[in-house]
Image 1 (tube, one colour):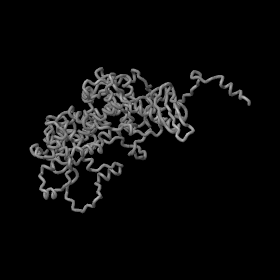
Image 2 (cartoon, one colour):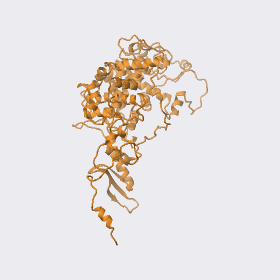
Image 3 (cartoon, chains in turn green, purple):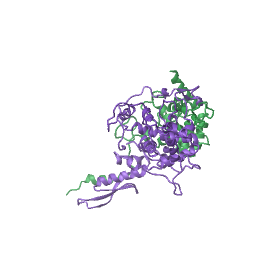
Image 4 (cartoon, chains in turn blue, red):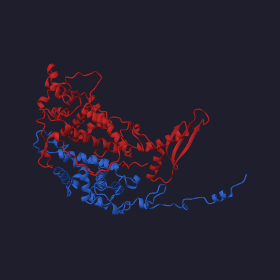
Length: 226
Length: 359
């Protein structure tokens, strides 16, 4: 039986991680090639993914010390499922929480009307307002998306559109910005509890300028006019 | 990644939305009037004339029975309870639309909060299915039936002939139209309404009656909020909705479990690669071989599975690893369940779900 010499020679140099040369591909996706993380985890606005101060500044400033959240959570708030194929922690669960908190807050906010003249109100709570466009849009995606945009909270967002050159609504920026806002409310809820989150909505969203209420009202009135 | 058992997913052709957002439209049939959109006190649905007077509602034996059966607080008026059971838009009495919306909002917050905090890692599809299992129409409909709510399905003529006191109907669930139906009905054949047909086309097989029961249950919860505040409502939801056992572990179905586990370990940043190793075997050459496989990353065992073939044992090990990740429920340092954000003296001790992996 003969021994294959070339085979033995090849085994004399074991492959270790140190001398392994990995080709990291840049540019358009090629099936089977590992992409360079530097490129994958950079947004189209050239923001590099990471817990650095530049990335987190807009929402940290918005939150103040009173509603502060951890850096890790803040980065998760800013990360959408579309970024890096969902490999980084993203904000889906946070926004699920935030949406429910905001919906509940808005339902209480709109129905709590002790001065109402509506004789069908129950214990000073006018439930006729529920189901109206205003009550629905107050926690709606468009209003939240516009809020994030007008308060410059969506300047750094980790997401990827199928076409970034499209407009605010069509590219998905509105949806992603709104989801970031829900996630922000969700992160405050997780960190500080529901009572503080409701104070946060009142103080930072309802009393901001322009407030969420003003934005929703203009959304609804634009439709009524059209 | 997984498919829900009895999934309602329908493949829809991809469409490009030109108008990306549709602003909510007013329900014209309610005839809502208001001074300004953000003057919430001024909203009024003009199709209703009045709420049932409390003195009339008190005389309905069905309402009194339901009130005490549910141990509703004294502050909860019979007139609100009667309104919660009325789905009819016409007929002069205020209906339960607003109450039902309010109840649904409260329910969906408390149910979501419970699931998001107690089961933070549930994949979104399973999470949504679990929310549906807790507060979907079928579940709430069953709950309404178990509360002993009766349906008002006799028309005026039948009521007159039976000499039924008018107070009776105020304690019954009223939905659909109650016009006299002179056509003969065939036994065992049910005619579907327009709404039921529409739901059936979307693969949802819930009857109008079930929907009405669900709406009544939501409205009763909404009514509790209006009279007794949020604390009492939360307690009621805990007692009646969240106390039910939902078998989350049966809601999973994995299509590519190994690939999903590898992706998941990648997302979690584990250094060592995922390996599936054979731990033990017996009777390889017999008719009834048994293998025990384990899913490992480095020295850590993620899951273990037993099977009558190596492939089966491997798959079971991987599924076991995935399930024990997804069904994780955090506990506090003293071994209790973590508090929910709506609890008093809440402290964040759990984790926040990081999202599913794409495979």
